[in-house]
Length: 107
Length: 121
Image 1 (cartoon, chains in turn yellow, red):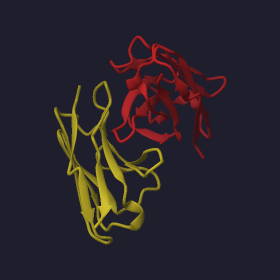
Image 2 (cartoon, chains in turn yellow, green):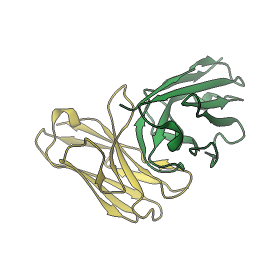
Image 3 (cartoon, each protein chain N blue to C red):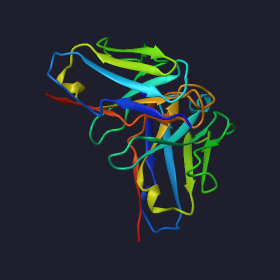
C-alpha cells in the first residue's frame, strides 16, 4: 500500500503567521491527493482535493500544491479557527490511505 | 444541506457482531459512491470499505476483508456495515463518508459525525 508520511508532527505557529505542512507518498500518486482538517471531537473536513483545488466554502488562505510524491498545504495567515490537526489522503490506488497528521498549535 | 447520520455503534465482546447504519439526506444518494472510514483514538483515519452508486464496485481494506460487509439500500438512502468476528483492534469511531464520484475511491465530502464501536470483554 502507499504509505503517506506527514511532517512535521506538530507545528507551533502564531496567529497571522504562515504555516506550511508537508505530505510525502511512498510512490507516485499523481495529483490524487486530498487534505482534511480535524478539530477535537469532530469529523474530518475536506479542504483540498486533486492536490490543489479548494473544496466548496474553504477560505482562500488555504492552498495546496505538489504532484507525484511531494505535496504541501499552506495556510497563508493563521486564524484562531485554523488550529487543528491536518491529514492528507491519497486516492490514486487501493487501499486509500491517510497520513499520520500534523497538529497545528498556537505558539 | 448534505447530512450523514451514523448509528448502531456500541460495546461488543470480541468475536461478536454489530451492524452500523448511515442515513443520508440532502443529495441524490444513488448517484454517489460511499465509504466507511474508522479512526482509533489518537490515530490517523483508516479507510475500511467502499461501495459504488449501484451497490457494485465493492472494496475492502485487508484488515477487515472476510469479516466486514458493506451494502446500501438506495430506496432508503442508507449505507450499512455488517461487522463480524470483531477484534479489540476494531475499536474506533466509524464514519460514513460521501465519495465525490459514482464509483468510490476518491476524496470524501462530507463525513458523518461518527459512531463509536468498542470491542472489549
